[in-house]
Amino acid sequence: MIHMQDVSKTYVTKERLSRFRTRKVVTEAVKSLSLSIEPGQITGLLGLNGAGKTTTIRMLSTLLDPTEGHIEVDGLDMRTSRKAIQRKINMIAGGERMLYWRLTGRENLQYFGALYDLDSRLLKLRSDELLKEVGLSDAADRPVEQYSKGMKQRLQIARGLINDPDYLFLDEPTLGLDAPIARQLRSMVRRLAREQGKGILLTSHYLQEVEELCDTVHVLNRGSLIMCDTPERITTQVAGLQTAHFQLEGWRDELLPDLHDYLHAEIGLEAHDLSDLRLSGSAAEPGHDEGVRLSLKSRSADKLIAGLLPWTATHGVKVLSFAAEKPGLEDAIILLSEGGRP
Ligand SMILES: Nc1ncnc2c1ncn2[C@@H]1O[C@H](COP(=O)(O)OP(=O)(O)OP(=O)(O)O)[C@@H](O)[C@H]1O
Image (cartoon, rainbow, N blue to C red; front, side, top):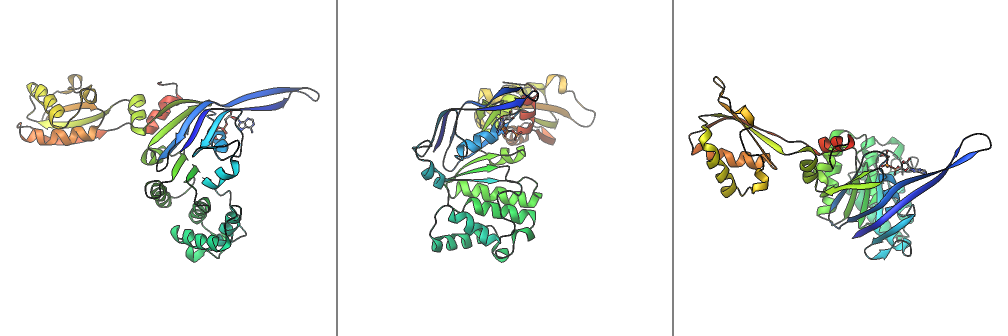
């Protein structure tokens, strides 16, 4: 496990005021940050304003020393075991950095692998394996400058895996990629965690990607951690509950207590999951030929819908239509950046 404990990073720079006068500028980029990255888990790092994500990733990658605090990787202290830690980690950045364009895909992998002092036979074997895994075997001996964007990004992934790291830091890995290629990369990231047990830290501006992949998400604002939870709970806490909408024929208001009991007893929705189980205000107004509109709020609209459908059949109520309205992580992050909760 990677463990960051009370880590801070302060940059001190000089700002020129006039020809002879400068002013010292102190920026607290990261403030007393604690976070963990566990094997087999995908941990998201999201930022609001001047958040400190890049600084955090650079510290985790051994490229920057913290001003204060402690970083440990599988029990190794970053101050005293830098080389051993470098063998356990790697970083993959989106965009087109970190590759040599004049070299072929294979030569790139061999160059980066040699930085880890890998035995040349093992390095050849691993390069071939990785090129195959990312679907670049046929293009392995072409210079990278002839690669498409997606091919370059797949080569980046292979480069980041050349030392078979236990932990991977992914900084905007799908930046600028077409949707199908981004989807391929996401499923690869998922496999790396779920099947190979790698611990992954992910930053991405595509919040749907974070929502889809991450087990937990850390939200930074001006260098401080302001939230850490599952994407689902962050969304619920900040953006509110989900709503299930139903259009019903044959609904009677006296059925509500029975429905409440049923969802609680049969579907196992706890009282706190059903905090707003009621007809939404006067929304239960009979339509002319469209039935009654019932809106129920809960933590999971899907569970509510799945629960209500069989119940209606036994209570003489016909479901004309239903829909789930779910705020996403993106809604939550926008609210947070506008000064919403917490
Ligand atoms: N080398 C540096 N010298 C001085 N200040 C820096 C340096 N690098 C970053 N900063 C400052 O530290 C703060 C955090 O920057 P950082 O790049 O870590 O944030 P970020 O979350 O990655 O931002 P973004 O998402 O915009 O890339 C910012 O205020 C930035 O201006």
